[in-house]
Length: 166
Image (cartoon, rainbow, N blue to C red; front, side):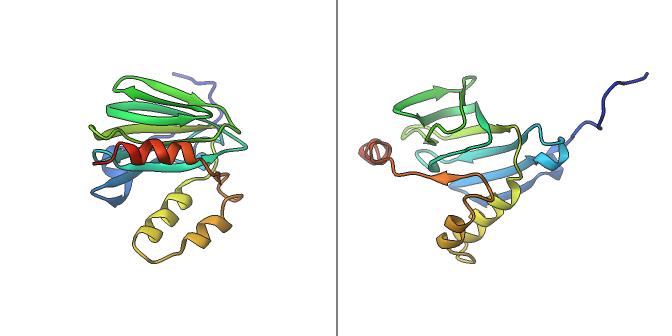
């Protein structure tokens, strides 16, 4: 069988995915941009009940797709804060501030895809090192441009998240 594809398929078997994090939140590194010719980068994120995912931020190069595989995800997208249950999805356009976390009453397992892809695996490895006390938050702030992850102040997001904590 012949193919017109210009590159091989990017494949990551479950047992081959690198997993970072702790029981409160884990990231499985699935397929990064360099494996797809820059078209997409993907990760799977699992969060314990009520756990925060990503702090408010935006991207300048990519739209971001969130697919909720299990549980419920609370998402800030611009000025809106919504809950998306299992089987639902949301696409956040580039330049739109957004954040996410598991709802107070549910855990969540989500797949995230950045399109077009940017190299993100080192970003998640840096977050993992920060969580282990091996790197500093200042290193993360210095890498915002490199990883196209620009943090923003969003007091309404944190007010909503903290109002529902138990």
